[in-house]
Amino acid sequence: MVMELGGKNPDIVFADADLQRAVKAVKDGIFTNAGQMCWAGSRAFIHESIYDGFVKDLVAKTSAMKIGPGREETTEMGPLVSKSRQETVLGYVKDGVSEGAKLLYGGKRPSDPGSTREAFSNRRSSLTSRAR
Image (tube, rainbow, N blue to C red):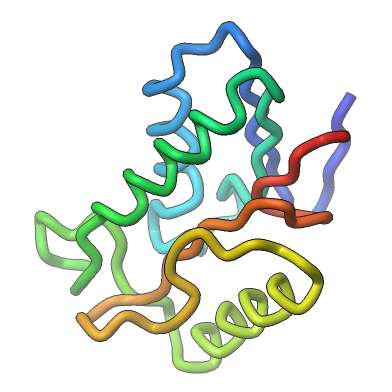
């Protein structure tokens, strides 16, 4: 059972899931509208038997995303709403790393127009945690 409140929405991926479809759904769930929606998938629970492949595919899809101006048709993730929000997100990245999360991709503001994108593993309380 998973009970979450306050806009913390989990994605749950079972062992028999269509892996590519699940990876796309998780990626789209967190990066659509730069993750700035109350229903954004802020964490993912992935069955242990598919975890490694799932994370590998998610990082590959994340790293291939086109970020840029939100009004460009080819942009997959636009900018965060403000400099303050960007600083908050970068603070989350810093906190995650200081708490032992392994940064798999990103972690700083990209040089191209847009916002940030990150992928973590071994995060105790959010994003992609491996249940023990």
